[in-house]
Each structure stands twice: as structure tokens, then as C-alpha cells.
Amino acid sequence: MSLLVLGLSHRTAPVGLLERAALTGDAPQRLLHAAAAAAPVGEAALVATCNRIELYADVDKFHAGVADLSVLLAEHSGVDLEELTAHLYVHYEDRAVHHLFSVACGLESMVVGEGQILGQLRDALGLAQEQHTAGRGLNELFQQALRVGKRAHSETDIDKAGQSLVSFGLERIAEGTGPVAGKRALVVGAGSMSSLAAATLARAGVVELVIANRTHDRAERLAATLGARVVRFEEVASAMAEADLVVSCTGAAGIVLGAEQIAAAVAGRGSGSPLGVLDLALPRDVDAAVQALPGVHLVDLETLAESAQAANDSGGHAGALDVDAVRRIVAAEVDAFGAAQRAAAITPTVVALRAMASEVVSSELERLDGRLPELDPRARAELAQTVRRVVDKLLHSPTVRVKQLAGEPGGASYAEALRELFDLDPAAVQAVAGAPISLPARLPLQVAGGELG
Image (cartoon, rainbow, N blue to C red; front, side, top):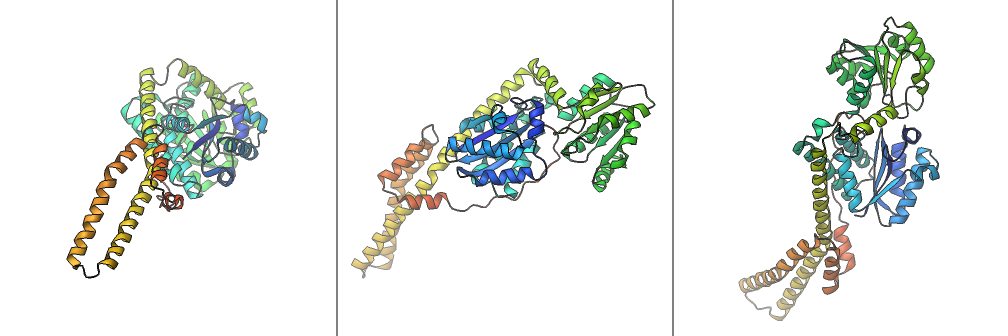
């Protein structure tokens, strides 16, 4: 597999650009299918979170793959290609694997150590499987990335240092409005991020939790698990007037909470303390003009990106020792994955070689039967077993050793040497390599919170 990663994230693009590039509605599915249908691409997967959009593809041509995927990302995100290109990053082969494993471990997250990314990667793999754009290569790659992420969190303390984006956002809100405990909170939305926010608020000790969502039934299901109250979406304005804190993440394509609406809610509040507003949506739910309103403390993804960068630079979220330990895990896992992939790549050649040897043995035994028809059946069977045993022993050490050598850098040349030395039919090798496989059922999804990546 020749893995190519092309994307943009909070590390390379301003939040405003990420907001404009956000994939809404059925755009992720359409982009995924378009990427998989591109000429240089064999398989494709898409990781789209609050703070990153990444295409993973198995390509047969590097430059053509980069060009085609860049154009497709621009078309489906609606951002001009020239502007988009200035913020794109590209990783290839081992560097691409290293990047995905680092993402899985939370090393590339806005808040370093963020553990929610594992849920996002499960979603990405599940979507690619559901849309039939992921085959053997990407399935194995993402499954391994999930295992590496779990290993990093179980063997180091990076998960204790790494907060969820929701928790980090609520800390920033508390800096301007006071502790969350004892407050009345309104959550707008009932998706995965909003669900995480509601659960986090409940654990933080809010005295009242209210849920509002366009789909009322979904809001009621979420509220039932948390003992919250539900209001209809058209009642959000009046609910804000009664709240101390508002968290919004609806996934809508436009502004959900306008400046005038929030100004009216502030005017109707009896409390003299500021109204905390946490906007975790991309594109944003809350009008940026709210930042200038008196009596409102707004925290959005742009604010969080700046705070997270400052915290990460000072080592405030993940200790340097934990980060270094995770980086060593990633490096070792990338080496192991590469070795396994190189060793696996020679398997079709080895299988084809053994199949050819078996055919030669069978042909010669048939020839012997024709020349010695009077041969005793027991002697014939013993002779056939002896011949097959001799061939197996002759092939055993070379094929085992060639698999070991193939796992080393540059090991692909050993498969070519075998094909040349034994004059193997390329079609026979390709038939083994292209044999159909059964992928596992779509992975179970878990509630995943914010930027995970």
C-alpha cells in the first residue's frame, strides 16, 4: 500500500478557513466517493472533525494523487483551490502512517493528549466501510492506529493530562464567569459533541440542565439519560434568559444564535453575572459579534485554539515526559507496521511459488504413473509423499528467510528476485494478491467529543 494523506488542521489553517471548509450534510459521503473514484486512488477514508479534514488514500501515483485529491477537497469544501493549497499538508508512505498514529494518540490534537480522537477514527473507518471505499489496506491501517492510540493511553499518563475539548472550553468559560458548579446550563444540539457537553456539565454539578434540539425526540432521549429538562428549539431565546451558561454545537450550516437574540436574552436575565457562551460548532453556531456584547463571555473554537497553543507551548496539558514516551511508541509502531506490510507484500509471491512447485510435483507423479503403471499402490503413495516432502524441505528455509528479509527496509526487492529466479507467472502472483477478503462488520460507534485531532 502506498499511503497518501492530504489535509488541513488547526496547526496549518486559521479557524476561519476551517469553518469555511467544514463538510456539512452529505458532503463527507460525496467527497469520499469522489476520492475513491479518482484514477490514482484504490481506497479512501475521510477524517473530518472540528479542527481537521484529512483524506487518506492508497494511491499508485504520488503527484497525480496529490493533484486530484486537492481539487476534490476544494470542490467539496467550497474553498478556492489556491487558497486551500497554501494551508494543506501532505504525508506519504511511512510519514503518512506516522501522522495517523500520532493523530490517534492525541499528539496532533488542539489539546495534546485528547483521547476523544479514537471515537472519531472509529467513525471515519466505519463510514469508509459503510460506503465501500476502504479495502484491506486502509482497514488494517486504521485498526492498527486505534490499537496504537489505546496503547499510548494505557502505557503513559497522556490521557490524564489530555482533556476533552468540552472540558477545556468550560475551563475558559469559568475564567470569565466563575465555576460551572451551581449554574443553570442550556445545551443547544443533541449530537455527539453536545451529548458530551451535557454529560460533562451534569458531572460538573450544574443545578439545572436544559436541552434544546431541532429534532425534539432526540433531545428527549439525551435528557432522559441525564435527568435534564427539554425545551423546544423555538423556545431557545427564553431558555437563554434563564441560563447562566449556554453550550452550542448543532452542526448547522449557518448561525443558530444571533447577536440580537443573545442581547435580548442578556437583557431579560435577572442575574448580574455574565452569560457564558461556549460555541463548539464548525461552522460556528454563534455570531462572532456576540463577543462585543456587554454581559456576555463568548468562547469559540478560535479562542480555544489560541488558549490551547499557549498551554501546549508551556507544557500545561501534557507533560514533556509523557509526550516523549508517546512519540517513542509511535515511532516503534510505525517501524513494526512497515515491516509487517513489507513482509505481507511478499506473501503472494511465496504462495505462487509453492503453488508452482505443487503443480510440478503433481505433473511429474502423473508422468511416473504413465511410465510405471504396474507400480504397487502403496509404493506409489510412499513415493509421492517422499517427493512432496523433499520439495517442501527445499522451499521451507528460503521462503521463511525471504519473509524475514522482506520485512527490512528495501525488502520489496526480494519478491522481485523470487519472481525472476523461478520465472513465476505475474498473473498467478496477482491472482493471489487480489484474492477477495471479508472485512469485519461496521465498527460500533461511541459518543465522541471534540477535536480529536
